[in-house]
Length: 152
Image 1 (tube, helix red, strand yellow):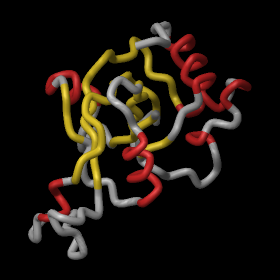
Image 2 (cartoon, rainbow, N blue to C red):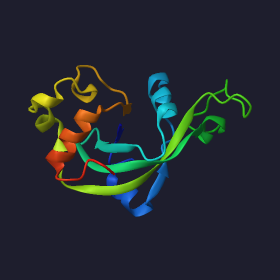
Image 3 (cartoon, one colour):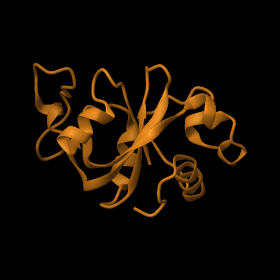
Image 4 (cartoon, rainbow, N blue to C red):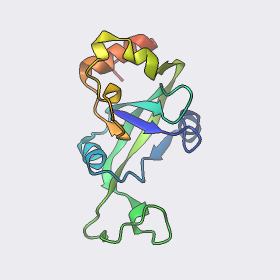
């Protein structure tokens, strides 16, 4: 998997400090459904979006499977969902835990130069999802580039 976050909102340094966090506030059906597919132990590339450079900066791991996103119930919050009830939640989140910070970020520009990654969702035109699938081959290629073990 790959999860995007703006470093000024919540970056890899925040995750390293906190050790674990909930991935709340996702309001896209496809991204929500991807999180519902995640299993404890799944690897996650942590990607800094809206940054210079945009880059994969670390690795995390899913530590809790999808459960109702608490922010959907907060009427004063930015992520309130009027249709959601405790009995029938609308939005979900997962928890992730810090694994490692990359010694060198893998920039979007660098990733675009790797032939093995040409089909990667992140590199497709117009791809803006904050939660994306990563194939096993893509995972192995990026881990090799980063100098980290592919099996978490």
